[in-house]
Image (cartoon, rainbow, N blue to C red; front, side, top):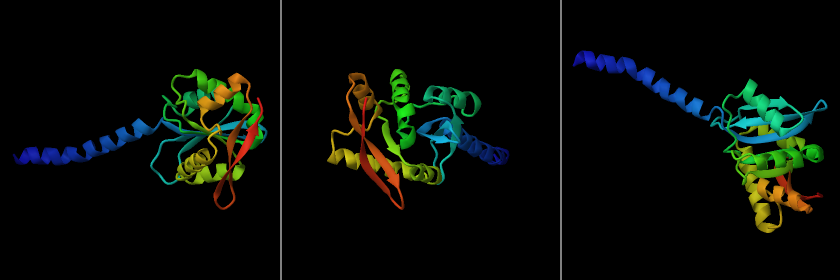
Length: 191
């Protein structure tokens, strides 16, 4: 009996450590949000991993499109990456014309993406806040939801933006700006 208790006590740290590692492996490749901005003339996509830390874990990849950035990130940095839990795509306002339609078209063809993922334009300060604070994503989503309540015509998810592009309609999307606090307004997008 004594031998059995000693054996259990010796195995307990290994079992507990194994469970913690399994949780990390489970969430290590789940992408919660993606942002795109121009840095030094190149388009850079930042993939934010699902995490419970105060500062988000992220990987930044420079590529001309979401599709190429995803492939490069998965091959080089985040094996078995999944975008099924993608909740937010933030596009810096200055690169909207370069990437928005192409990235939305790509997302629409992928069964692994959630068509309900929020999409919004933003400024550079918002992206900096997103990189520093894990809570920024939920604040941004809350602001988008409040805007949608006041303006139901706003297109704030990938599916509705894709449908508007497919029909050749102009539409309004949320613009998130950050000085000291997050603010949301509307921007008209022409087809």
